Amino acid sequence: MNPPFWLRPAGVQTVLASAGLRALGRNAMVDAARQTILTTAEGVRLLGYMSRQARPRQKGLVILLHGWEGSSESTYIRTTGRFLFSHGFDVFRLNLRDHGPSHHLNTGIFYAVLLDEVVDAVRQIADAEHPNPVFLAGFSLGGNFALRIARQCAAQPINGLKQVVSISPVLDPDKATDRIDDSLLILKYFLKKWRRSLAVKQQLFPGRYDFSALMDVDNIREMTERLLARYSDYDSAGTYFRGYTLTNNDLRDITLPTTIITARDDPIIPVADFYDLHTSESTRLIVQPYGGHNGFLEGWRLNGWYERVMVDTFENASPSD
Figure 1 (cartoon, rainbow, N blue to C red):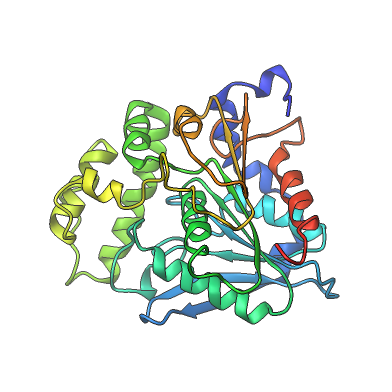
Figure 2 (cartoon, rainbow, N blue to C red; figure 1 turned 45 degrees about the vertical axis):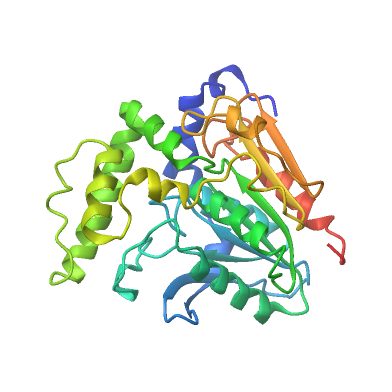
């Protein structure tokens, strides 16, 4: 991709990726959406929205996973879903626990290490689609989940899941946290969203949670430390982060066709981590010079370049993939 000069700054790409103006206008995917609550084997309930084509085209279903403190209504999810839907794919937008309007569904709080419940949800969705193909695409933390799901599929395949695409995935959450804390604008954005989410959870379960000691903290790392100290068995944020870190050889066993897309100028995810990855032959890594975090916007229409990559990748997936 080669965006015009005014779109090249990483900050511009990153801010516009989540800007509501990109989602303006009619969205046939949203119009067709039907709410679904999936219950996992462990009793966890996850909220999602299924959008079906008016006339089945058998192209398959794309499951979209948002980033941390995003949701099924995040701009990049809505715009990506709209593009995929316009190209004949059904779309399922899955909310991670405590994201979107789902805080009431589970007593326990969200942790990024809770992979099994997301795998279970994706498996249920895929089983219901048989024999049609299913594809998975995640952004940022959702991209991290997507890669961990692809890795787990090497030992426990998900029937019908053909391809995975991961956009701006978090590989080392310890480094990503420091980068967020060092960027005033990005830090302010995440602090506001996380505080609001915690306030909702506390209001719903006042006898179980009291997050007042977190609300005046001015950085993500210290908030994480305090949350873990009171409401988890982790002894530190570093230990917790290692539970979903993907570096070095962590992706070498992936057998499912997987595409990873990142930008050299991502302000949150260090590009060096991608160069140090040892991946399998089934994994394709695309590093763009521009794109920021979750951006990759090409022109004045603010369309995401990765949307075309997804369509090409999914349409060309072979039945045996």
